[in-house]
Picture 1 (cartoon, rainbow, N blue to C red):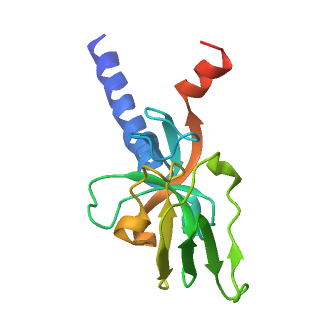
Picture 2: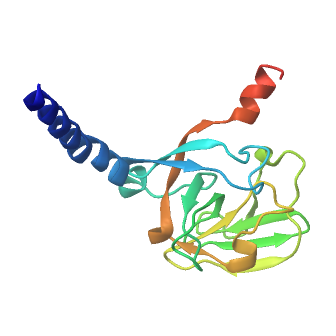
Length: 176
């Protein structure tokens, strides 16, 4: 009986070390949304699974929802929408975001159907470096983002949102 118990403990430890730990370290990571900066698309206490592997094989894309460390503190995590890519120029003016890049040297106005009655206030004109990204929250009126503290580098990106479990959306669907 005692041998069986010891083997069960060893089996559990091996399972953790060989399967669960590598998945958590290199592939997927849980994340809990805190704050209102991504409403109405992501709510306070939404539970997310972050894909940590994809950006090792491909570059981040405009519109991706990413989790990252802000440039001023590597111990905290933020969730925002990726708006500007490396080597682009981003101009925010009169509630419009204009993106200038090699394919669009005259710029194009970013269409943001996901904003749902939120607006992008203020003026900002920034040219991104080779490893820089510009991120904004979907709830632009309250979001603390690249408009305030600048760009983020790829090394600060933890991953992109793969799965969302939203109790707010579930309650609405069930009409609680």
